[in-house]
Length: 496
Ligand SMILES: *[C@@H]1O[C@H](CO)[C@@H](O)[C@H](O)[C@H]1NC(C)=O
Ligand SMILES: *[C@@H]1O[C@H](CO)[C@@H](O)[C@H](O)[C@H]1NC(C)=O
Ligand SMILES: *[C@@H]1O[C@H](CO)[C@@H](O)[C@H](O)[C@H]1NC(C)=O
Ligand SMILES: *[C@@H]1O[C@H](CO)[C@@H](O)[C@H](O)[C@H]1NC(C)=O
Figure 1 (cartoon, rainbow, N blue to C red):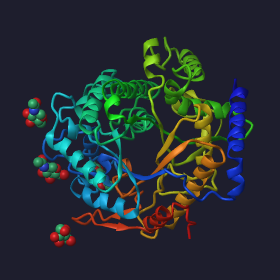
Figure 2: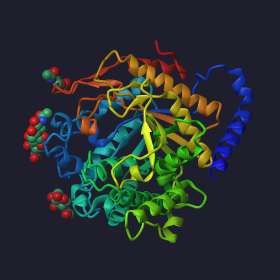
Figure 3: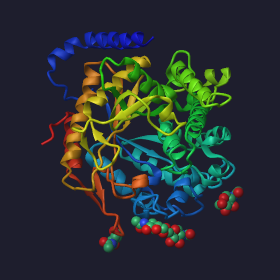
Figure 4: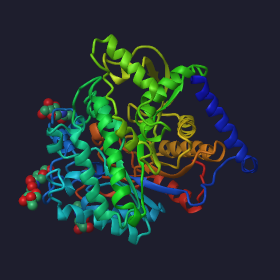
C-alpha cells in the first residue's frame, strides 16, 4: 500500500516533468508567473477590523478570550481596535491597489452579520460594512476572495457547544446562506472555514487559542468531524441554491505543514504524518472513496481499544454523509508556512491526535527561524507539500491562500523579502517542473495585525501599522516595495 503511494508520486512527477519538458529546458530558472496567475494579499476580520462592540455586533469567542486578561494572550493584547480596518478599509484597499495586487482575501465576522449567532437577526450595519468593502474592491479592480469564517464564531454558539456540537453544522450553513445571498452577486470565490485543523487543535485540544478548551484526544476529532460536515453543508447550499445564478466557486481550505521524513526511505512515517494531518480532513472531500483514511481509522481504533475505550475516539461518518462530503470543493485552498521533519516515536499527551500517530515531529537546527516559535524557513518544503497534495488528490486546482514570515516589525525587512523569494521560487518549480495546478497565491499579510495569542508582538505585514498611533498609521516596508516591482514585472525579482 505504501509502495503504491510512493510509486504514484514518482509516476506523477515523471509525467508532469515530461509534459513540461520543452518549457523546462528553455527556462533555467522559472522567474515568470504564469499568465492569469492570481497574486493577492490576505487578512482576517478579527485580526484587522477592531470595532468589536459597534452597533449591534455580537460577542465572538475571540472577544471573550482576549478579554480574560489573564496572560493567555501576550501582553494581554486584544483585537478591540486592532488595525482599525473597520474604519480604515478604504486606506487598505488603496494600498492593495497601489502595490499592484489584483485580489484580496478577507473574512466576514459572523457575530457582526448575525448578532444573535443565528440567521433570525441579520445586522444591517454589519452587512453594509462588507458591501462597502466589496464595492471599494470592485471599484479598484481587485477581486474579492471571501472567507466566510476565520475563527471568530459567536460566543453564544460556543456556549451551546461550538464545534463540539453537530448543531454547528446547521448554524454555520444558515450563516453561509446569508453570506451568499448578500454578497454572491459580487463575490465569485468563497472559502467556508479557515484552517479547520488549527481551530480544532489550538482551540479544542491544547486550548492555547479561543475558545480555550483542552480536550486532548476527543475535542480535536469531534471538532474536525463537525467542521468537515459544516464545510460540506456550506458547499451544498451554494451548489443547490446559488451556483446556477451566481456562477461562483467554493473551496476547501487546508493548513499545510510539510512533513518530511528524516530518513528519505521511511515511506511509512511520511505516509502516517501525511494521512493524520492532510488526509484527516482532505480524504473525506478529495479522495475517490471519501471518508477518513483507512490508516487513520485503523490506528485510532486500535489505540482507543488499548486505552480501554469502548469505541474509537475518531467519530464515524454515516454513509449518506460520506456521499454528501465527497467532492464538496471546487478548488483547494492551501495555507503554507513551514515544515517539520518526522521520525517514528512517541509524542504528545495520551490520548491525543498527536500521540495517536506515533510520529515525532522536529526541526533541523540549521533552519532559519522567524519571530513566531512555530515558523522555520524551509523553502523546499513548499514544493514538497504542493507535490504531495497534487499527487494524492488528482492535481486539483489549488490556490495558496496564505504564506508569509513574521518578525518584530522591522521596516527594513530583508528576511521577509528573502522568505517570499525563496518560497515563490519553489512554488514556481512545483508549477513548471512538477506540473502542480496552482492558480494563485495570497501572501499573509497586507498589514500588520493582531496575531492571535501572540498579540502585537509578531508582525506578518508587508505594510507596518503604528498600533500606538490614534490613526494606526500605515507605512510601506521594504518588502512592500519589492512586491510592487514583482507585480509590475510579473517576474520573481531577486531579493537584494
Ligand atoms: C466598546 O469597547 C471599548 C473598549 O474597547 C469601550 O471603551 C467602549 O465603552 C465600548 N463601547 C460600548 C458602546 O460598549
Ligand atoms: C437583533 O439583535 C439586536 C442586538 O442584540 C437587538 O437589539 C434587536 O432587537 C434584534 N432584533 C430582532 C428582530 O431580534
Ligand atoms: C495580564 O493580566 C493579568 C491579570 O490581570 C496579570 O496578572 C498579568 O500581569 C498581565 N500581563 C501583562 C503582560 O500585562
Ligand atoms: C489623524 O487623522 C486625522 C484625519 O486625517 C487628522 O485630522 C489628525 O490630525 C490625525 N491625528 C494625528 C494625531 O496625527
